[in-house]
Image 1 (cartoon, rainbow, N blue to C red):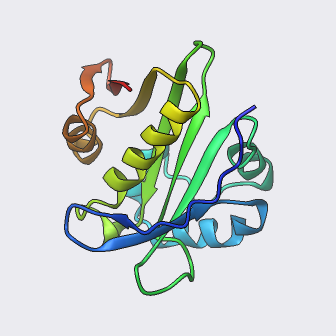
Image 2: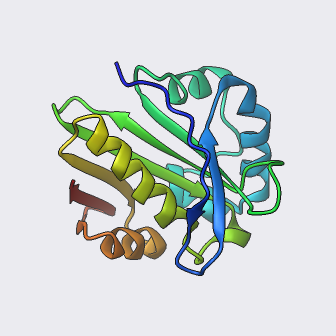
Length: 168
């Protein structure tokens, strides 16, 4: 089982400001769905390969289950209101491998929020004994491709999908 940790942040972004980060819980579903509503259809499609407008309680239960991994919420430096992004680190069927996924609100993209979240999840993966991170995105998701390349991942594009493989 992966232990639940409280991540207080702040985490620095490449643009120079620091985001606040904490573990997500079941009570955060409303805020996460508000995040989805603030994201454009293109952003949601880039994350889910479909333009999902919300998560169900069952999906959120799975994402926030500590036995499956970690789910982090990111907040603007000046407020802990609704999250500006979230990221997950989930077990896969492959031993020692974890899958990373990120959603960042449109207004907060291109400033390093996603990169900061994935970098932190990488540290958690190492602590949990993982040796590899993987991530998947649509082949047109250039932001995801650049983010994973910045983090040193081997990025391949096949059959309309990006696969990032990052040894940790």
